[in-house]
Length: 343
Image (cartoon, rainbow, N blue to C red; front, side, top):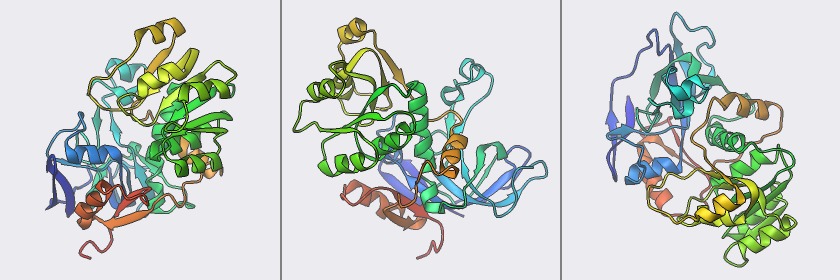
């Protein structure tokens, strides 16, 4: 079977590898149908993702159809459409014992530390598979995984109905955070540098928007929050100055959520954290949030249809990653597909 492997940074290969077989642990064989390209995949490709190891078959937004089930599998049957959990954890370390397996001491993320979904078949435990709603195409279903990341962030932020939320960044991550946050609270401010993205945020539920190239972020946030500042701020931009920016914009007793993976030194201001008694919290991956995302879709509260802007066959992954690097403004979500791989 064919697979996409990053042999080392900036070296993408289409390789042939042996098709996996079901066993007592990996008791569901999935024929992949769609896999999304995420910013972290691009980071692995370029060697800027500090968590990745090489060589690696990447891809963690993984959708497919059940091809075969093992004798001890009871939840699925051949033909079922599923999305695969990217997180694997040991179950016995301290984080696992307190219910936070997404930061397991022995964490292995598919597509990062172990091989992921850019291959024609995967054998995985049935506990890592989730049945997809019929209303969602395979391509659009890859967006469930980034949605779980946003659910995790809002959960870690302990976002409530009374919060005044600031989302910094209106790209793919920020717009998904907005979709989840608007299920919880209505006082939402979105900040970005692109007017078109801010207009889309307004259409999708933001009460206020700020173009940080044209307006003073801290001043406008105070204006929109009665002088207090945001009660929760989520960094969906991950720039070198975004954390300091949010420490300034967040009001007393607020929570600041960090999701970036850069290892570069950044500037912070300890006084802002201490004087305001801010909680600065990391949010990584997701902690069994696939079920919650699917529940929102089935309840009609979350619409992921039409999310994909471009698709490429798996064998043209190099073209797809080159297109990502072009920063074409038409790009929203790019998906690799698994039909007609010789096309």
